Image 1 (tube, rainbow, N blue to C red):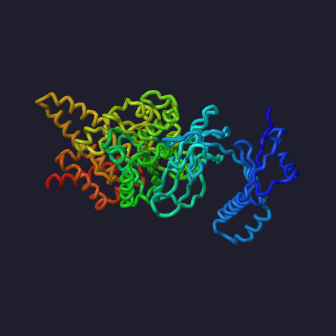
Image 2 (image 1 turned 90 degrees about the vertical axis):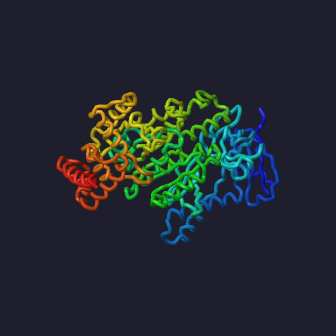
Length: 581
């Protein structure tokens, strides 16, 4: 058995006494059969560097100075700008003992398409960050002693060359978090890309953490109102819920998510929008729109655009989720939008195929379900003992020709607590939001509604279901009786009432007033084309002429018979006069 060769790099060759002093530490790890090889390196004055295979022990002057600087910076950050730092720095210097930094250094075996194969890092862990020469960082995703580590690169792979050095960092992938993130646009690694200056991190959180357990949670019991009448009345979303928004391209999926973000203004909710694989110009336009509506003050945008590499698109939703957990664990309510997870799955499929993992159904790897389940399970409504914070997820998935039975849609439908299905035919007919009442569902249901909303919406879904059935039947009939004609007219009126312009969410009391009036059939006498206008005028009338009713709805969150009757009388009078004009 050959002896272990320890290479000593220094400006001056060590004497026998110095070599003897190193033996106890080295023999403990590498055995007693050790031989030294001296290599002169004139830059290493006042220190040395040892290399044993892929292990490196650095005790150079620059490394020790770096250790001291980092220790000082930690102390200064801990003071938070309070008190005199000079005595503290002197005390740190007197008590500081430098250490030989131990590193494991590997080499790049091959690189291409954002993937590097690294050899010589046998101790590296799954998900650990590696540092490549030139400053590029990567993350291990494949662990194989025979073929080397499979590593995805978070940067331009042209700066990574074969046989170049790779260092372990001992850290898992993380993202910097602090309150300064609010109002900012950051990349998938948490660094600002909006030219508004640096963000001072309070701490770093790993992008992947275990989901809260059952004991740490409580049931979903508070509404996360979207401001969209068709959703809040029939498919309510609760704080801590995961509600999928699904539909074909250009059917208004993102519009629903953005309206929900705008509707959180003044509700002490932190919103996070994760853009995956979108055009940078689209994200810039969305940012300006949120600024115009005053929503960026409580919103963080995490952007991994279409021009970013697949590894960055892969980690973007996990980074956004880690930012959300930072606020959730401090007792805040968080709304996070993943737009969209179809592109996220495609990015992961590209990485997996490049890492030579076996393709399965639709060429996705076998663990693609776990990819999204471990992300979405982190959304929760925490118990009061754990701070009472919540994180509500709105994942978006794009379908092809309305096919919800494809692999990724079916996966995410089974993970989430319901879905809002947007139909192309409804969208192009002018019904916006184009919510398909038959295929959409919320598995949390009334638990995520106020009592007022629950009582006001009543049999709305049943009425619309009857209308749809009648509408299909009457396509083949030429002569209709009066009851059928009235049912169809009423149904058309309800559908018209559910139409809303983008960026125009309805507040809670407006929704309750409109629903009570609609279920009392007070809109029946108004022309179909004028119903939307009449709805808006009715809401303004109540806010100006009947403010006490609006205040009661918002404060009590309930709807007793007296309040319902007051709404019906006032609305009937106003809409009756509107019909006369």
